[in-house]
Length: 182
Length: 115
Image 1 (tube, rainbow over the protein chains, first blue to last red):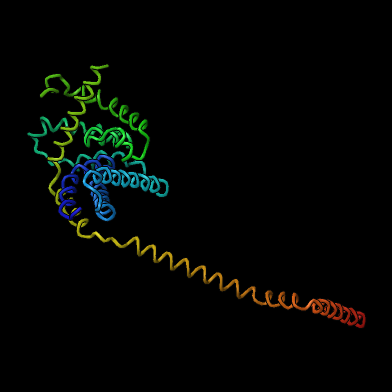
Image 2 (image 1 turned 90 degrees about the vertical axis):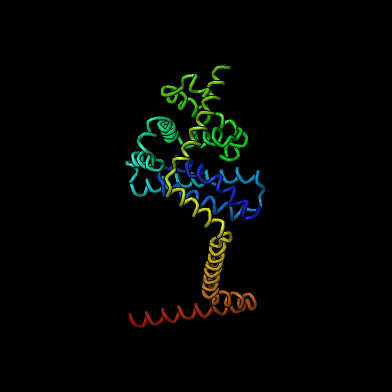
């Protein structure tokens, strides 16, 4: 694949990749590092792959980098005993990462996507990854299992659990039938 | 059941749209940094670090093994020479045993004289 084609591919994926990483790690700088690492690895190792193969490979690398980040965080927790305040930091930095919104716009539809991001950020990592890959990236069960390096049964379980959490929370806020159909 | 599936399908569509919408709200500095990251990744295709690490590790391991081998050879050399001699000449072992007996006898004699 030529440099231009890779550029187009990464340009399309970079914002989504960043949002996925941000939801997972809750920190803007770490999320940017993870996306940059994933881009490096993709260009370095898989630049010869076809366009169809690139997207699953990119997501696999991205998820793997996110998992590495969690592993390092666990080690840091054990070694340094700094774990107690992480969840608060997560919630704070997540809203900072996507928050650049005028007050007028915040009142309407943005509140809904902020709510969704908030719900997603609170999901366990595997459920969150599964939901984003299936619902946002449009992968089927088999593709998601390959990207997440787990069984198809696990994907189904993670996805149904994620939906179970998301469904009632979003229903409360805006799910009238008219709004759905709009 | 069917209602639930429809409901979930709508939920998925809606979530997808909301997530897409969230991309339009990404701060400018994040977009700029993503562009820089992409350009860097594309311009540094040959990322040599892993090769350097592999070479450095290989040289270190080779050096360590060579040093250990050399030391163990140096320590084992006199024993190896003696065992080779004894294998070649079995009488030498008897002579050694005899000379050891003689030296013991000499020590006993000296002790007797002193007492």
